[in-house]
Length: 633
Image 1: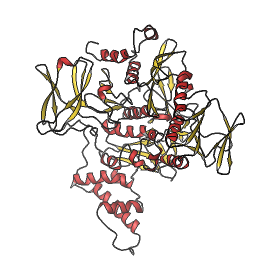
Image 2: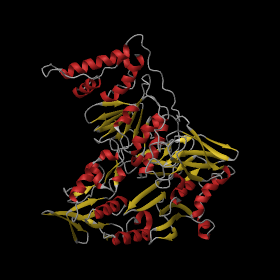
Image 3: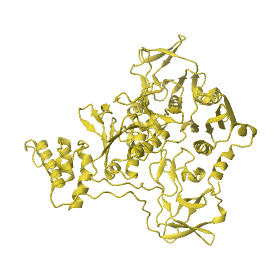
Image 4: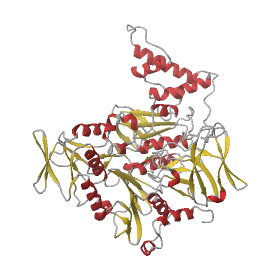
């Protein structure tokens, strides 16, 4: 039938990697299908090669497959695929109406997690009940990233979203759609009414923690090609958002890695995951197939000509696009010293890198970590937990000193030393020598530090060298406007590779949370739905089980206000410059970091004077956000 033929085409196109020119009509398309593609085609049709003596099986199968595809497109009398409707939120049938609270019990601006007992044949579960801007909302109770309880987070009236207390993911209270950060799945939403002072929620028989986001379907009459170069957080979020925003053309993701997109930050905290990257996948193959997102693994891009709107792969294949997003992230910076390329000198970015480090750094091995920034300290903590003897060499006197200051850095240093990690500050490695099976890090002072393996974490370099025809910053990253559009028509950038405008300054932020959010904003810009990226940069790290959160953008500070005890790693630190709070760091004080991020975004952060005078206490940040979420605010 016509409908099944169109459905088959939508399923088969990604498998064949069909990439015609953006102006090519289906009826004019000539497809070159490889032997492997022909075999996949026959497999899909349930056909088997009956004889090994059949000549030119690959060519014959390719021609047959191509002919069938063209015949399905060209067959007279069959209607074309109908345009896909805009995605709509579909709720499961209501099976029970549950009284969850008295309306007067939940003040405007507040949220509460409510357990739903089994009733009327329905399963038990939990919901988030939020009273925002005078309205009641009921959603799933947990964040779809790491299942944090959303009731312990914050909400903001201007965006009508709820924010996870751990990692800053945000979800629309009205639709449940993920709108910011690392949560990719949607959370369920339920109809709410207030009857005789009781809050009543309509619930299905079975309650799911998370649900698939509403996505548009591919329309074979939409010949646009939107290209995503890079298979990391920004790239996956962009592809998702294109479909969530109703885009029905082709979505093609090019990733040079052979893995499906994965949760990269986990690698520095659990090297063993490098041997099982599938367990880290952000989306599985079935997801991409279901939503007609073509993902090309192992596709190395040689160059992107922004003026011609064309990408050329190392294989020689050329792909023309209508709009493209560069989301290629950054690569680890190598040590520019003699011996920096020795086999035992390792860096971490991919699962293969993690496997090499895990293999070289087994229990009892002497390991040296060069670099005391976040990636270096995360790896140092991981190696120590593996039983290694760990020495960290930092150019600064204390870890994180350049970003977080010496005072907090000294507290982190003392914490690491209590765990058995040796920290040597203000050290510069001049050379690395191989002495039999041992490596030696030769310091500027002449001291030699022996090691079985050396792991380098000294920063990253934006991956944008392959792009021509678009303006770049001095560090090689792509300059964009506030909506993440580059200087070239139809070309956008997101994540570590993007140097975006924010007010009077440009910023490049190397945070997973920012990359995911920028992928969503860039996708909307690609569709002509220009939306400024206004999120306050947010970062988190885990060090021996202690979580540090940092929100804001602060290249320098002239005053540091601390509420709590840094030595005990229980504090809120305010980084101030010229009488303005520029950033906030917290440990063991959730949800203060996400509350501060929302207040900074809304330009409602308390003044330095108010903080110093005690007019606004730390707990008051959350209360202030609740007040701003009331209907009267």
